[in-house]
Length: 322
Length: 261
Image (tube, rainbow over all chains, first blue to last red):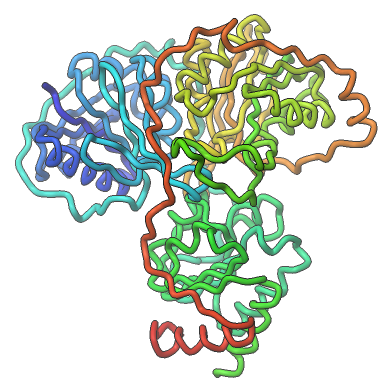
């Protein structure tokens, strides 16, 4: 019995926040099913990462180390983890649901005749895993069937990073066999898309606009509301995809993560890619014509109605209250 | 360059969805359907690559008979021909089973490039392209916004792609062909089908392949057991009244109850 392995990801030389959340999920799964939980760190030099997790309630910390793991490639990661898990034979493999994990974990699972249960938001006895369907309109429960490890990736924010418990694990090393010729892609240095001139992360008030605005010509409506509130203007991805607002104003997994005092979402349905970027806000207000829109699942206050009527009325009400 | 674009037909974005009697899927009878959004961007990228480099664009879609309308739309936008993998139980298959089905349909065509959207708007597994590359034994890159053919004088054909990373970062990746790419939305402006395109689409080849002929059904590893309405994370106060009343009440609450203004 090899229990649960959580594969951690590095960000700026440290264990990433979403990795701690995955670890918390792994510990909860272990407690629920009475299993051991372990963590794996990967890279060309993993000492510092291993040291970061060495104080947590884990049975083992494995350092999967190889010069060819210095920069992420799907090929090297898949090869290394495949070898490691063939040796360890875990029952569960837990990842944070990051862009990097999405790039290799499905292939790794397929190589082991398994399927990743992706973007999980919770689990219950069984275990049955819950994930969102139809852009958050519905939730589906999934069960792993058959032999072999169950692959799970957990959504950012679904588990609490500060819930990770302390302990004294054994630290081990694993050196995979990777040949440079097996790596077929050549990744370049990461770069920023454009000069970042808007710092949404430090804005106390944000008015954010989504698809419901229909046309670029209608944007002044929300700009006026933002001006009346003294708020920064932000947007969901489709608005930036269409070029109506610059990419730097995008909130969500591919844009900025914000947690202002007030986040006012106008015509945003609340797809998970957007919610992960703003659900930590202190107070969330949603204006949407669809009462079933997933944005209402995270909102503190809601107005169900036509934004073309509600927003101008709100701008007036804000001005009147000053 | 021979390009296959794998597209999926999904419920329209604003469609009202209802859970069906089995509680395992949604009521499909009265739904409107559309092309999955990121797949539409994959198609656009493929059409632009063809316009620059020549070649052929083939659309491939798995699903029941109704997906024919989405395939025709792709043909009207400029795809040359289509393959429809006729399959009535797509929602019950897990990501590996669907990728196997698509891989078997792709193999006889030996394309240079397979493009697909990064994630479906209905099931949202976000895995089909990556597993497909694994099954075909070719390299892949995911979350791609732009594709360029490079002419590095190497013996093999290569492409350079722009990959989206998290939090506003990007990365260029070079990889040899054949390859699979999953396309992120927003990299291009989507085209509309022209009247001429719609007319031409009617005479383009659409080959229907029954799923059972190309891949045997295997039991899923990840089983969708039931669907339900999501649990609310916060209790939302819905503010009633006409727009003016609701707006005034909201400002009051933000000032004196939430104290954020």
